[in-house]
Length: 381
Image (cartoon, rainbow, N blue to C red; front, side, top):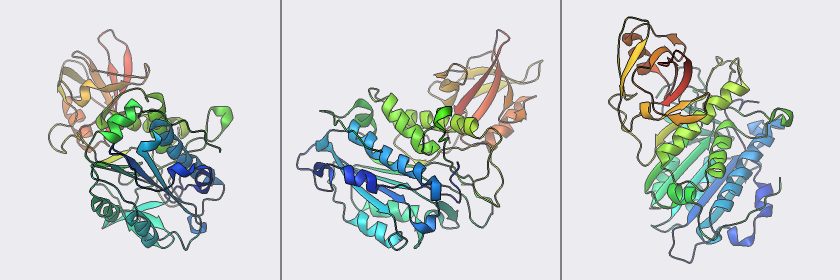
């Protein structure tokens, strides 16, 4: 099912009850960097999840389990907040809880929210029974902690409620003796900000398939993709740019597989045919200016845009081959015949599509040997 109304939740009381005392909120005594994870799920009656609550439970418990199994006990502090009643689901309650978290200058502060979300003229917000909690307000509160790295992750919709267009389980934890390489690279070394949402402006965020016979498991597309990355690539050191690319592709493909005919995030909204992870910021994020693709293309005697050059370290050199399930570089001589849902006759067609495309662009390409391949490229911005 999708995240109707723009939401998600998370029955964290299950995880909280299973927590060892060593993981309850406290200040680390050592000088090594520590990840302080504030994990919030809105399962209040006003959220109206009903049977869909299992997805939020899977998301939030999974988030805790992934961190607990990737970081040593000495470098992980967990702060669960389960909003099980409408009177708890308020901006003031969340902000007060966040205010009580004490971090040191060398620590990482991670804030994860699963619940309803929406947007208005002031920006993206978490939609709670007690009012709107704006993303920017959470960012400002996190900034006051002066952590070396702030990570804000939210799995919720990014639609305007007024309908106008908008752009812009039991847990077994086995803490390792030292942080796994992916957590070391993403959470303990970087500085600055990581701010990601499950869907781009104007999009809803959806649940995955929960049918075990079809290989499904409760959870949302974004959180499931992120947790799968952390598990499957746990021994890999990667940058946030690489991590976002992986998650963005996985969410796109999972949406297409789960909702092949598209789906509407809630009644009254148009159906969408894709879900695109939106990055507000992260260390090493490309500037939102200049060329988006990194490709040089030209017209030729046949329909399409012929690739002449792929700029090193650009999106064109990190394209996801859907059939081979791996990242490759596009090559000179390949001919782009379709971009997203538009037939490409000339270079001008591709330029127009790239200018208006979501950050993940789908390409159908004729290879030099005459075969055709589908690629996904994560545009620079």
